[in-house]
Amino acid sequence: MKRRPRPAVRRGRIFRKARRREAVRTSKLGALWARLGASWARAIHWWVPSTLSTLLLLNGFLWLGIWFHETTASPNAPSAADQSILIFTDRPHVPLRASVSFEDWSTGSGEFNSVYINLFVEPSYEEDTVGFSVAIRGDNFRRPEQEFVPKIGDCSLEVDFHGDDVAPSCSDARKLQDPPKYIPLAQAQVLSGTLVREQGGILHTTFTVAATNGWTSAGASRTAFALPNVGTGYRSPDWTPTKEVFDAKELFDPDVSQLTVDYRNLQFDEKLEIAAPEPSGGDDDLTWVQTGSNSFRAHGSTIVLGMQERQSNITFIIGVLAGLVPLIVGWIHTRVKQRALPKHTRRRTKEQTSRGRT
Image (cartoon, rainbow, N blue to C red; front, side, top):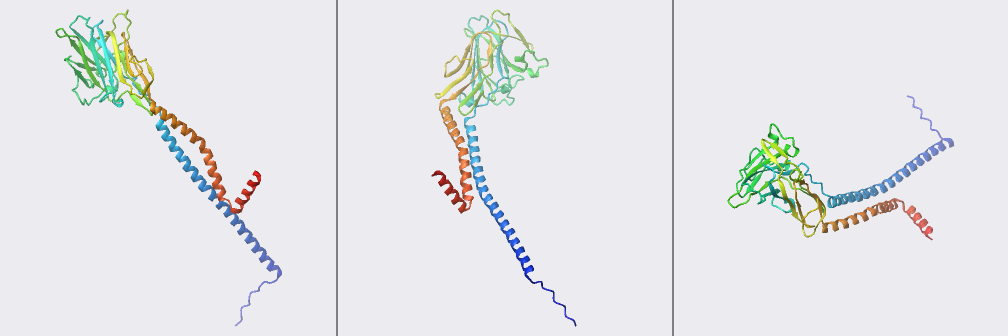
């Protein structure tokens, strides 16, 4: 049986040099990969804490900004553009005084949102009876559930009369087959009644109309208000009587000797910022008095003095912090990057810095 020949082993200087060159090449590649891995590790070691600290700082500043916005935000403008309260009589030239008071639950001026209306015929009027109508427009006064008082006519007004019976009736323009063309009456609910003079008495009635929402929008230190349009149709004294027809009723603008619109009194630390028209009751009483047949829509805003001072302080502090944020972020980047460098590099950088100072 023959033996298998042993494989030839290559020996000699040439083959030893080749193996040595290959080993050196392998070691250089390994060192290169090691250096690359170390540099990537240092980069990641510096980038991760720096990014996390920056994100945490910015997140805290973002929440601070949100809190600042909620604390100093201005109120939304209350809208009463679709609301109006206009007064009519069933005949022309009726001398009338009227007062309309608004009770707003959100301001503490009433137990619920409502309008208190007082109609008073001047003693110079000689007739013993007169019919009145109040056209109330706006979805804010439409309350189909009728929580407190019985329903009147086909309206969804919630009305509570005080005093003598005036035989009230009510018609909704939305339910008429032939609605009026006059805009204040086109979408209105017209509440009507008859004032009867008792022996030696006067022609007078008062009633309350409930509302769903108030007429105020509150912000941090500012409160805005907007009331419905109140009064009568405009008529110059030298004009002939203007007649409107609503559901077979003839409506005339009365001769208003005085119209008073009362909203509320301001708190002791509250100040009137702006109002149109100018209130007649002074700086602390939102009351308007007008003469003549006309209507107006009161609106404006008030501010709370203590809250305004606090808002100014908060604005100053936020401004200072906003200026410090770039400095803080830069300092964090520098400190984290220095700690991520090798010790000998940090030592060399410190020596170079000290030399530059000297």
